[in-house]
Length: 109
Image (cartoon, rainbow, N blue to C red):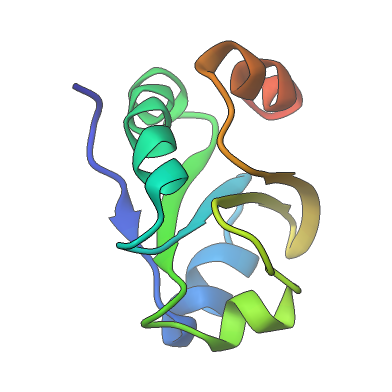
């Protein structure tokens, strides 16, 4: 099993994500979301393999409504990658590991 991803809240988002000096991946998810549960272990594996190059975080959209709303997250899971305070990539929906690796190659290589 991969390494557990830390959670980020609305209150911490700016400091933890936007002001980070390395790319940050945020997995927007919810307890009731089946596809979110499918993608979670894949992201934990990627965190273990690539956590030195990109920070992996997750945000519960039910507990933290402000940030998802600011970034127009309408479907979950949504995986956003932020670089230098800007949204660099958005991946919507559950994807297999190979597809996620391909999408994230710019940030993990």
